[in-house]
Image (cartoon, rainbow, N blue to C red; front, side, top):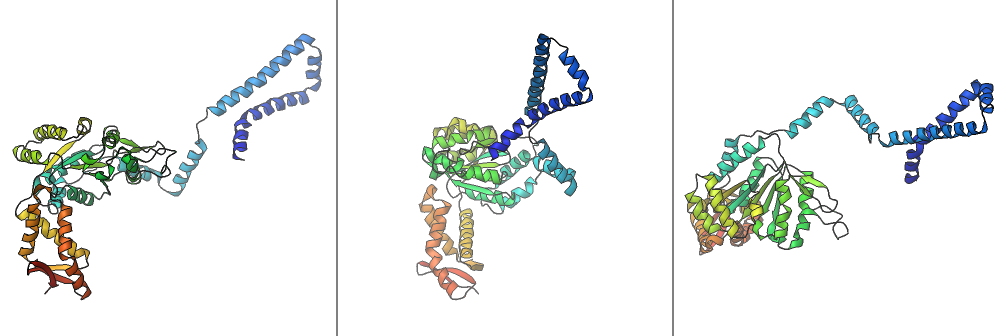
Length: 409
């Protein structure tokens, strides 16, 4: 039925033109019937044929012209006009257009306030917090962009706060975080999880996680954790996102803009050599970028990927009281996850020391996940006992070679 209506609509204009020609002929015949008939009868046979052919040609020419005009008309003109009429009638269209324009223009943030907020949460990385806050402020102020707001590479040892800083940045900037563990994409086909599956294959009825995420929240922060462990083909898929300002959804070919997104890449590649460079070029960001790029190239990151990185940040290793601070925060978070709170001064220093010793034994390979796992294994059972006893506040003590939670006072 729909096909029939479309065909009818396509031939409606030419048919109308034919009817108009016939109606005009009938009108002239009615007004001057004898004149038309006499003039026609007075023509010779050859003249009648010529006039008949001319009349038919004129009618066909009108039909063709009408069809051409119909085919060249702008699509959906009436629908757009109707939509604008609705906006004019029901709301303030000018105010709505101004709001849309404002969304697309620059955004100004307080870099100092952002840096302070990040430093209050991320331990031992004050220089990185100051630098990234300044970078984001400059890039958000740009009114026209054909690329993402920023593509930042976080380098350094596990457990130095790379992932945690990205999460805190999303919170402070009030942006959604799209977090992807790139170790899960070690195969060439892993890109389908992010960018969708081509038509004809299983899974092509839904978008990829990255394309769907940026379609729904184009101003998200995209965190690509341990990027170096993904397959090189997956790396290649990001080149257009960072260079051309869009990614393509494989299932339907639609282009999803990346110009309002912030990409943060984390890597542990070359961490020992980068750690030494960080102290040497701490105040020279451009020189640090040059020498760190060479090290990252030697450790497997492709030059076409590194050339699209806007800024490289090197996280320094944590020592001494910084490790104690991170450990204390993780313990507090773990206690909170069990519906309890730790009273002020409620963590025995010996407890912190034991966890710090465990991290030190793992040297540069200890990650924040290792620390969290160690804390949970040590105190979870004791926390459950206190929760069942109806306690809301607890203390952690180190007694008889083990950690115990007791009622707070």
